[in-house]
Image (cartoon, rainbow, N blue to C red):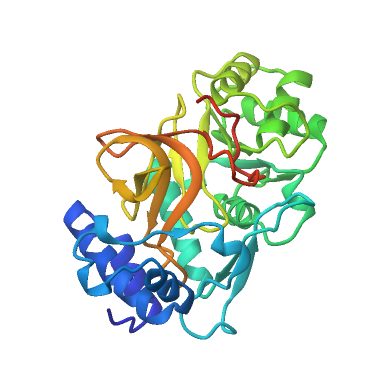
Length: 335
């Protein structure tokens, strides 16, 4: 694969339209990353995989997500990158670090992803209820929300820390103006808003990004959504599935059923046989192909557990028992 320019490779990734195009590009990116990502190359060699025997996406080795905690996962010169995204962590766990060589690829990915699922962001006033994430640097979620706020162009778009009363006032004003709203928030903050300031909302998308961060008891996603729907009078709660180690996100418009943009795909691996991966359907641990991760690793074996449907949609049901708690995306296991 010849990476001749940032715009050239971005155009190729984000113009994928068919499964054949996706598979072909995934194989190209695998060969590129094997050649230029030393950590990934060493991992592929360590598991005894012959690079020349990789003929389909089922043959591609997936890097365990834990490597992002212990290694610098990047193609080419390790000292050349635009930004480092870090995961939230507890005192007993090490944060993941994602060295982003070209931040424009991430920007293109989430902007095009939002447009793919929600059309033009400038139709919305974007309200970000992300108090805990604003308290630390390196959050890819805050970076995305900040850009969406600016892209919306609405005078009332913005971040909210712990001032829930101010958020209520803003919501009432926007309701009076019949303004479409995207309320993006971490789970514990949305629950607090629902309990302390319930109100009927119209033309509003409520999108939870996961995360109790130890603030309260973990609850199944279905129970969380029931509470939020009742408190805000909406028919569905949307969700975002993303992580520090990725540059793309999946989105759910209700019932916890996620869809991927065309440049992202989910696979299911057997927990007891991690090299057995299915891209058709099944239940097990989640593998992700994220073509936007061109300069780090596009093939990640996560610690999430879920179900893949035949049409490519997926659900997240919990975490593998041995995994560290992920601050942003953990939902209580329903297994």
